Image 1 (spheres, each protein chain N blue to C red):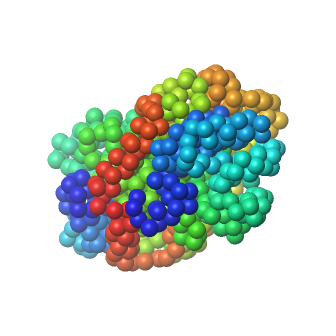
Image 2 (image 1 turned 135 degrees about the vertical axis):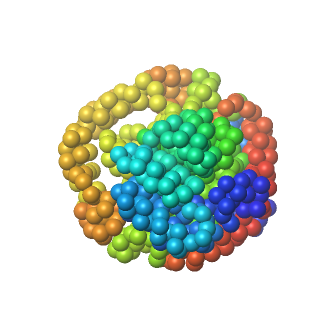
Image 3 (image 1 turned 30 degrees about the vertical axis):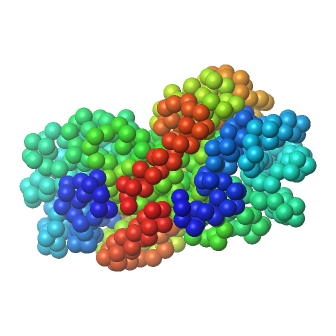
Length: 315
Length: 315
C-alpha cells in the first residue's frame, strides 16, 4: 500500500494506511473510532444510532482518546441527520462520510465549510452523481456488506472496477473485506483504499454487545442474508426475527405488516443489548471468515501482515 | 501467475495460464473450447445443452481444431449426464468438470478411469464434500456468476478465502471475473486459478447468437439479477421473460405456475437463437464491464496484460 493511488487516501485523511473503519449503528462509538485512528486507520463514529446530544458526547470522548483525525458517518435517512452534522461541525470534525440519501443534500454545505466529504454508493451510476456533487471520494459498497444495502445486488468484485473506470476521484471499496487478502483483492480491482466494518465490529473496543460479538465469531458462511427488500434492504444475521420476516415475505405480506413486525428499536435490541433472537443483527457476509475477538491494534497488525503475504503470493 | 500455487493449475491441465473457460450451455461448443485451449487457457465444451450425439460431434470437431488438451463440463441435473460422460470417455477426454449435483455421483468412476475431475461448488461446505469425494480441484463460484447458482448467495469475495482455508486441494475462483483485475483479485484472495465465463461468451468463437453477444456488450451494471429462486436459482439478463417471472414471484405464484412459464427450450431460444425478449439469457453480473466482442486470442492477451498491470499497482 505504498503506491501513489493508495497514498491518495492516506493523504486525504492523514492516516498511515488507506483503510477506513466503517461507521456502524450501535457498534462504532468513540472507543472504536479512537482506537482505529490510533492504530493508523481512519476511525468513524457511526452517528446513525445517536441523538445529536449523544453524538456530541462521543465526539468529545473520542478527542480525549486520540490525537489522530477521526470522522463521523451520517446516514441521511434518519431525521436528525442535519443536526448531527451541525454538532460535528461545532466540534471541529473535518471528515464526513454520508450515506443512504442524495449526495447533493449536504455536500455543498460541507464543502463550503472546507470539510472532506465521502459518500457511500452501491452503483456506478450513483458514484457519478457523488462525484458531480463535489465529494472528495466515494465508498463503493458491494452486496455482501452488512446493514443497509442497494437494490441492484452488485457484488464488490463486479462493482469496484465499474466504479473505478467511471470516476476520476478516489474509490474506497467496501463489502466482503474481512482480512488482508480482501484488502489486496480490493486494491487489485483498482480501489484506492478499503472500508472495513464487520471485522472491526468484533473487536474489544467496539460497542457491540458481547453476545453480538460472539455471534459474529460463530457465524458461518451462510449465516447472513439480504432481507427486507420490500422496505429498505438490509443484510443481517439469520435469527428468530429474520425467520419472522421471511415468513411474511414468503407469503407476500404487505409493507405494513413488515413495518409492524420491524417496529422500533430492533437494531438497538440486538446489536447493543444482545438480544440475539428478537434483535436485528446487522453484519456482513464476511462474518463467516471472522473467528476471533481482537483488540483493534491486533486486528490492524493482522490485516497488514495478511495483506503483505497476499501481495507476495501474486507478485 | 508464476507462483507455485498457480503452476499447480497449469500442471493439472497442461495449460500456459491458470485460467479456465467456463462451460456454458449453448455458448461453449467446440469452436470456443478449442480457441481457448489454443490461446493457453483450458477450454471446456459445455455438455449441458447437448444430446450425447451432439457432444460427440463437438469433441471430434474440437480435436480437429486444437492439439492442446480441453475438457467437458457436465451439469449433473440433466438426465443425459451419464451418457455424456461415457461419450467423452469413449473419445479419450481426460478432464471433467461436473456441476449441479453431488460430487460423489461420478467422481469415483472417473478417478478409476484415471481422469482429472473438478466439481463446481457455491459453498465451503460442499467444497469439503468435493475434496472428500476425491476430486482434483474445485471451482468455487460466487453469487455474481451467470446461470445456475447456489441458494446461499455467497459472493466471490466472501467465498474464496473461506474455501481456501478449508481445503488442501487447489481452488479455482469463478464469478465476477471479467478482466485481468478480477484475475488478480481472485488470486489475492488465495485462489490457485480462475474460471471465466461471461467474458468468453462475448468472443467471436462463442456459439452465442450474435444478438446475445451484443446484449452482453450493451449490458449495464444492473442488467442481471438472480431469479427463479423457488425453482433453481439462475442469474440472467433482465428482459420480457424475466419481467414475467418477476410478476409471478411478486405475487407468490406457485412453483407450477413458474414451471409453466419457464416451459422448455427458453435458454436455447435466447442464447442460441437470439430471441432477446422471450429467451432465457444466462450471463454473469460482470457483463456490465464487458464492452467488446473480441477474438479469444485478443481476449486472453488483454486479460494477461491487465493482470500484470493490476499486480504492478499493488506490489
